[in-house]
Image 1: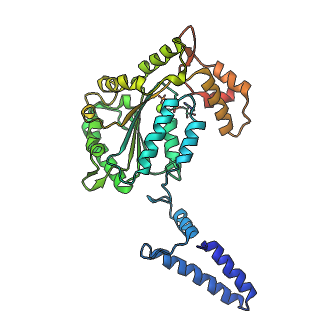
Image 2: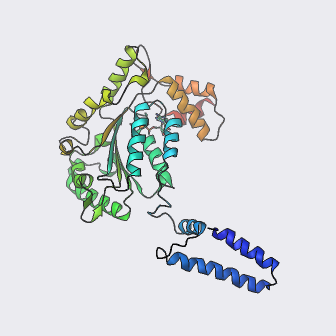
Image 3: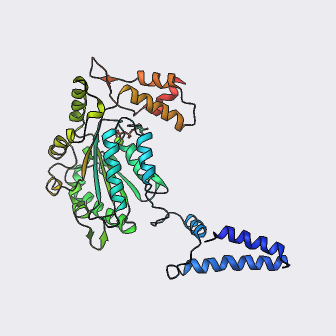
Length: 345
Ligand SMILES: Nc1ncnc2c1ncn2[C@@H]1O[C@H](COP(=O)(O)OP(=O)(O)OP(=O)(O)O)[C@@H](O)[C@H]1O
Ligand SMILES: [Mg+2]
């Protein structure tokens, strides 16, 4: 099918070669534009479509919950996880498989629920951003991406009853507005225990009160279990094993019991444990010196600066590492790297 802009151009060129008066040419062009609007308005009753008109229409009226604004880029996600996320081979592999499988399924039984765990600055928020970037045209800035921060949105334990009903209503309305929504619960370790139970029915069943939840993605982020993840990584390293030998099963056995038994996980005493609504608990490994260097190089590239290895090494040397003697893992990962790059340039 000839795109509208090319058709208008073609009609214009044809008119230049025909003997039509300029005023009549304008009327003809106006007529073509009018017809295309009428055709678009009568969709889906007609199969006739002007592809680039649809694009113009969508961008004119802002972001909507349709396939123009929401279309999963599987290759993009794979490339982003491979090229932008450093030192997280387990998270990268599991997230790619889980999100791809889920997004390709047009009729999932339940929402995809991921729980990401690890120490500071290891990429939990960052990876959530990469997922959103490859689901929405507007990426992380899409109005269908909702980030809830424990500190910002649920600061008072005493308000739990109010929070519960507000959260239920709020999520229901967001999903009613768009089934393909992403909810990110940041700092889960600070969320009042029991609050998440209020949305359990939404994560459990496909449809609640006429709202379909099964196409949404829920991501929980927390530091719960980070000490044990760190211990496992240190043990691997001390035993002379490769970082890449660590597998999901090395963490799965302890991660979910810790999350549900910890007093500070946001899940504690939660019925979640019994209904197994979290699809997968994903460990984020502590980052090493070489990963901090990679983060610094990426930070310079992102800011349009020429990546400088000397600067990146200075940034990495400026951070603290553990264990005390061996100094292998960065205490705060890549957390402050973006800003520290400027100190050494
Ligand atoms: N594994 C990583 N690969 C690439 N960049 C990373 C990685 N981890 C962290 N970064 C960089 O550091 C910044 C901060 O990381 P992020 O906010 O994702 O940490 P976090 O795991 O959520 O930590 P916290 O537990 O403190 O919230 C990111 O925006 C990104 O630039
Ligand atoms: Mg974070």
